[in-house]
Amino acid sequence: MEGGLVMTGKKADKKKIYTLSIVIPVYNEINTIEEIIKRVQATGLVDEIILVDDGSSDGTRDILNRYDRDPALKIIFHKKNQGKGAAVMTGIKQTTKDLILIQDADLEYDPRDYQALLQPILENLADVVYGSRFLGGPRRSILFWNMVANKILNFTTNILYNNILTDMETGYKLFKREIIEDLNIRARGFEFEPEFTAKILKKHVHIYEVPIRFTPRLYEEGKKIRMKDAFIAIWSLVKYRFVD
Image (cartoon, rainbow, N blue to C red; front, side):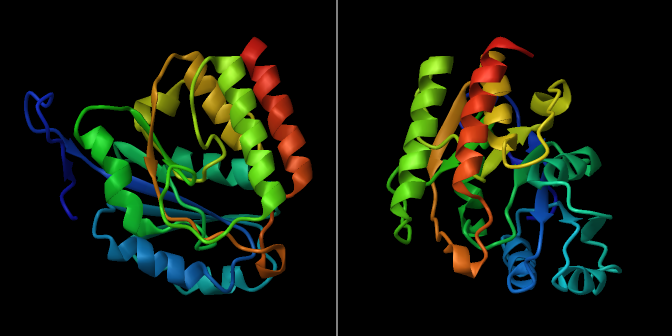
């Protein structure tokens, strides 16, 4: 929706216009990159799209180069693969809008959920919104051990930070720009999710969760996160509970 998003609801003393940046980390997504760009643009809610190619070697970079002259897109190329967290932070540093939403490039998350994610902020109910895969939204069946790992990570998060989250590891994280400006995020890989969550909760920022659609990929379809990343995530949760 060109021109920004308007705050609504009883708590909005006056109309507040928000603008929205989408950050898309990309690594070897030749089969999905064009479709995700199309879906994000089709929402009509986005003011800025920033794609960060994290050293792709499968032809994704060639596709992104075709968009080089598209004024609606800002494309950044890492010379070598650094990890999802590094790509996300590169993208965030390039954003210029009020709200920032992270969008994976693999089609597991559906941009049609943007409005639901935005609503708590537009109604002045939250500064950070997570799209939860486990609040009853429609989804394709998930791998059993991936589900177990997610439950363990959520349980660990809630114990350590005295909170009740259903999906700490979600890829859909929406937040106001000022939330991340003073966060020192060190993560280079998939540990971005627990580090961001830990530091947000330590600042006593309440996280609002909304149900989202979810279409998980299989490993043979290109899914990249592995079981070892769950152990790294647990260590990150424990570490950042006690250090800055």
